[in-house]
Length: 446
Image 1: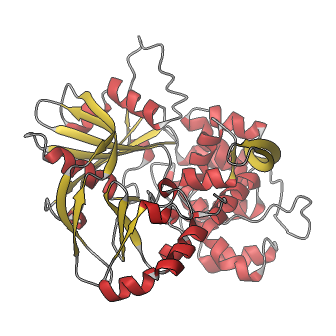
Image 2 (image 1 turned 90 degrees about the vertical axis):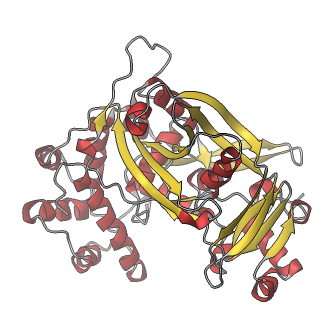
Image 3 (image 1 turned 135 degrees about the vertical axis):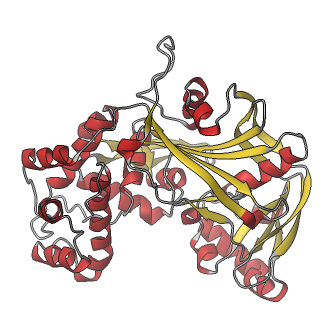
């Protein structure tokens, strides 16, 4: 099978089966794994845990996909994703958790996978505090069939569609039981803007048929040495779209105490190294276009484990390939990432290929190994080494006012950091990074 992208494969499927017209006429289109496999492996074509990762042809036509059985799927203009709300709690107010000192096999400074994060949740007091339940024992996990159930799901331009599911596959990261409830957990170690509701709804419907205790649904994100736990529920059993947030809390294993004086001291100690003038640059590092600094940190943490090519980064971060380049360039801009050429073997056609990979620089590896507080301050320092950020930070710090986009764009033009056509979009990234800096403190200045 020739290696093509998921988007190219979906374009061929849309063309061959006239999918858009079918959806316009009938409201949905059923497709089988065998049909998908004509162009690409179904496992690479039907599981998009974040809306950012959707192939562009699906996103452009506002079409989403749901599994209905093992080997069958349904396409329509479904509303399938739930936006993850901005963190409402200041980092400095998060509850600090101690791991019992007698555990020698848990390295709390090197939690690099979802399974490791779950292990820490199990041995710490985090779950007991969040659930307000003692003795939470893991009793199930892994892939399993969903059984049979029916539900309705909202669509963008039509009334909700009723769907029958028969033994589709779902995967549960952790299933726990305590005296009063069954807990189903979906765990992530990368920051995303939203998540696929299916990840909670299908396991919920499976276990709702199996047990008498009420089921609690927990979405866990471990990134930048912070656990973020969100509990969800469905108001109506048979309504996929009735999801709602019950509570959220944040926990840390590290000292997160950073105040405004720490930021000011970092600013004073920082030496400006560049004004980012594109006409002066030797290595031509593009000016930043990666709004989520939290996701830059997620990428730092994952590159600490292994080098990745841009396709692997896109798969990990659940976004489009071009965004892999944006986030690589953001790390390069800070001196954290670099590319190199490697040779890899492909069992598909028994050949060796050259591939460009991304790895951490020595500075990037040093940052990755730091505890929370020194890591954040070092990242602030690396940002402030750029003249435009240095000036905007001090202006925001002294006035307490968020810089307007017009002010940011004025400086971008002054220092010739990018082309005119790119200024507005990249000014949004500058604003987002400044906001990240001030969110580190007890009192957000901007």
